[in-house]
Each structure stands twice: as C-alpha cells, then as structure tokens.
Amino acid sequence: VHAVHQVHPLNWRDENVPFQKFKSKVLPFGSGRSYGDSCLNDGGVLLATENLNRMISFNPATGVIRCEAGVTLAEILDFALPHGFFIPITLGTKLVTVGGAIANDVHGKNHHRAGTFGCHVLRFEILRSDGFRDVCSPLQNRDLYAATIGGLGLTGLITWAEIQLRKVSGPKVDVEMIRFEDLDEYFGLVEESDRDYEHTSAWADYLTDGNFGKGIFLRGNFNNSSQTETRSPRPKNVPFFFPNWCLNDVDMKLFNTMYLYRMASKSIRQTIHYDSFFFPLDVVGCWSRLYGKRGFFQYQFVIPTPAVREGMKEILNRTLKSSVRPYLTVLKTFASKKSPGLLSFPIEGLTVALDFPNQGAPTRALFDEFDRIVASHEGRVYPAKDARMSADSFSKFFPHWRELIPHIDPKFSSSFWRRVTGEMHA
Ligand SMILES: Cc1cc2nc3c(=O)[nH]c(=O)nc-3n(C[C@H](O)[C@H](O)[C@H](O)COP(=O)(O)OP(=O)(O)OC[C@H]3O[C@@H](n4cnc5c(N)ncnc54)[C@H](O)[C@@H]3O)c2cc1C
Image (cartoon, rainbow, N blue to C red; front, side):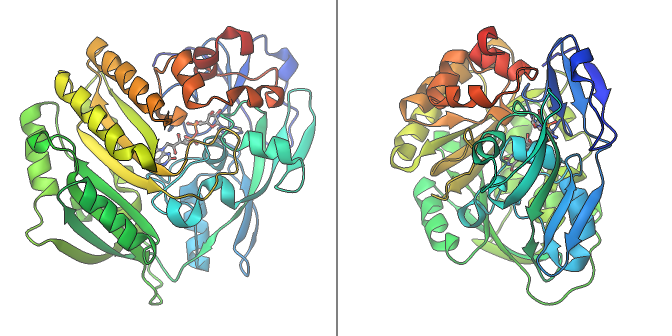
C-alpha cells in the first residue's frame, strides 16, 4: 500500500491539536502494525501518537492501569509483569499501541475466555476536532464508547485509556502442542481444550495432499508457580515458534515438513517464556521482508460456526484452482462472547488467517472469490488486515456499517474508509 501523508506528532495528552489548521482529513496513527490501509490516510494528516507514551496511574491491588494512547502493550507488560499482571488479550504482537488495540478491538489466543480487547477497556478520553474532550465508558457516553471500540480511528483521538489487566504468577506458560490430521480433529481439540486452557490456536498446513486441516494445535495456561524472572528469551531460543520460509514452493514444503511435522510424537509439552508462545514474530526484526520486495497480503476472515466446514471446503477448492498458495495458516475459534464495539470483527465461528505472497492480479482475483464465499456464509474479513476489499464486499461483511456514520468526527478519515465506503462518507 502506497500512501503520502503529512505527519503531525502529538506530544501531550492535553495539548490543543490545531485541527482547523489542517486543510485535509486527519487520522490517528499508532505503531502502524495494521497490515493494510486502515492506519493510512493518503493525501491527509496522520496524528502520530508515538510520544503519548506515559503511564498515568496503576493500582497494584486491582490491576487497573491508566496510560496514554501511544503506550504499547510491550511497555505495559514491562511495567506490569513485575507487579504480577499481564495484558488482558494475547494477540500475535505486543508492539501495538493501546489506541490501535482499541480502534481495531483486537483479539487473541484467549478470545474464548476473554473476548476482545474492548471488553477490558474501562474508560478512555476522546478528543474531537472541535476541541471537545469527553470520557467514554460502558456507563458514560455509551454510544461513543461502542463506536470507538473497533471504530477504526474515525470517531476522534483517544488520548488515554484505562485497562483492566489480568493477574498472573509469572512470565512462563505451560504449553502443549498437539498434531491434528484434519478439521474434525481440530474442532475436537477446541471443544476439549476451551474449558481447561486459557489460550488456544493452531497452525495448519493448508494444502498438503490437497486436504485442509493438518497442523499443530497449541494450548496453554500461565504457569502458576511463583517466578520472578521476567527476561525475554534470546531469539535463538525461539526458532521453534517462528516461521522461516522463503519464496518458493519447495521451501514452503520444506517449512511445512520441518516445522509442522517435526514432532515425532503426537504431542509435546513445554514450559516456555510468554514471548515465545504469544509473540513469536516480534523477535524476528523486519520479518515481512521474508516475503520479498512485493510484500504479502494476509487474508483473515471468520465464518460462523454452522457454515464453517462448507465455507472452508469452498475456499480450499478455489485456492487449488488458482496459481497462488498461502504460506502460512493460523486458525482460532471465536466463542460467543460479544464484542463491545459497533464494528468489531469477531463473531462466533472459525477465524482463519492466510498469508499470501503478493503476486499481483492473480492474488487479488483469488481474494475477490474468497470475499464472495465468505459473504455467502455470512462471514466477514478483518479490516485491520485488509488492503483491497471492495465497497460491495465491505457492506456485505458489515451490513450495519452506516450506524458508525453519526459518530464519525467530520475531520477524520482513512484510506481504508474512503475505499470501502466511497468518498461520500469520507
Ligand atoms: C505480527 C502481527 C500480529 C498480529 N496479530 C493480531 C492478532 O492476533 N489479533 C488482532 O486482532 N490483530 C493482530 N494484528 C493486527 C494489529 O493488532 C492491529 O492492526 C492493531 O490495531 C495495530 O495497532 P497499532 O498501534 O499498530 O495501530 P495502527 O496500525 O497505527 O492503527 C490502527 C487503527 O487504530 C487507530 N488508532 C491508533 N491510535 C489511535 C488513537 N490514539 N485514537 C484513535 N484511534 C487510533 C488508527 O487510526 C487505525 O485506524 C497483528 C499485527 C501484526 C503485525
């Protein structure tokens, strides 16, 4: 995604942002870890929150932390873990900001227990372009609270937020990796694990034998023994968890064989540092370069439970007819816990994230087909990972999207929003 914008750095949470001076639309910018253009504002202004990086208050008895919106989840962990608290949602990277995590209402390996990030946001302050500031919570300014969670940065600038952290004994996680042979076995493991394990997800080998669903199921719980050591492992301790593949089918097969099937036994148990389990990609600097200069797309969708098997079969068949292949597949089952955001992505069902190298037109054509399949099963594609869905697809995935319009700050917009809604609502 190419975009040209002006960057306006913010330094203080109470500063007067000169909104009226900007001739074009503005958009808050966190760490830029969104995969597509939801964090971009081509031709407009990005309000960089990097310097809004201060902790404001912390209650060690309750684990409630208040911090500025540009604080990253990694910084919260560094601060809170020595006090025995962890971030509430275990998404695939800790390098995102609190503002970004709210605006996409991010989810993680513990969705079946904890829901989305928004479920743990007790309150936040929002600054609108007319200079008006207000605090939003589930009880105060409820509509703006719901619109801002998963609101793609369009409802105003979050200056600070208060988050409920989760109590833990230490940095270690007891992990079990279990080989599965097909989707039925995967769902059996989900059913068996969701009751006793806080964190579950899976890596699948999408196309081996033309059969979807072989892979490794990961499940884990925080280790309860008291520990004081909080250092991250060195990258050399991590290779088992990060993909190290290159850009051709031979290497991909090698990766699948070595990585997914190197387990001689059906399952392996380990106690490991949380970084290795939750954030394997964070230890690989510039990992996206593994896909070459043309980069890659991640296509993440969710299909509601009743239609999952049929939907996955159609996606697989469509892929087999195409010349492009995904290099990595991550599966996670979303439970029924409702997201608090108006446009939050998670709904009950199976979410699948497929990493495809960017091969231009054939890749995009395949995604258009996927969109049709996902929409026909009442599923949706994740805006945080998207750089190409059409306005038509967006309105099928989020038929209620117009409910966001009354809450959008007229000075705010993004490249994503203009693309999926048309200039009219930008
Ligand atoms: C390796 C990797 C793994 C990932 N794994 C997951 C995962 O498991 N689950 C998941 O849900 N996502 C995942 N993501 C996506 C990522 O969590 C989201 O895209 C997240 O929103 C990025 O946050 P950010 O701070 O980088 O925000 P940006 O990408 O900079 O911005 C994202 C959105 O937040 C808005 N925003 C940022 N700051 C503010 C603010 N102060 N006020 C109002 N709006 C604001 C922006 O306008 C934009 O709309 C992953 C991304 C990567 C790179």
